[in-house]
Image (cartoon, rainbow, N blue to C red):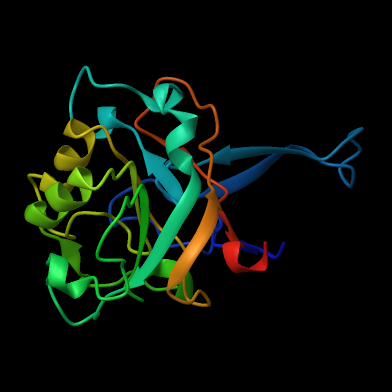
Length: 211
């Protein structure tokens, strides 16, 4: 079965959220410097590159990164494109999503991504009504190719809160540029990073039609 990596690297060329801690790497020891090994030391925000937010990100006392449930991050997923020019995504804008049945995992393809090396000035965002509709259809995970499931200038983070309050989770900064709309198998486990507000993810899609 073909596996397609839809992760954006956590690296020095990946754009961080403006004002957040960028990725940097130094070397504690090097072979060239006479050390027995090359030994790196990394400083970064866990929100650089592809990652899962923890509920702690938006609410004190909510679960942290090590409490993210693995089951939400693997299984059947739908990739659905939306028009990058719209601001708010309503149910009728999800034209490639099946009209009936469960939608446990939705990956939203907007093409407003840091994957090309620049931070987008804006991007489409699901309305809270659309989130509630998806939760009613069994949503457990919303993935986006944008830097956030909320808008760039949002202070209330309504989509984050609606997802977490409804028992669903998110993936941000996916690379869906080469992915067609359709049904896939997703594996996107967050690393076991303890007690913080997000965790890096290696996200992979497998084409169900090749089974």
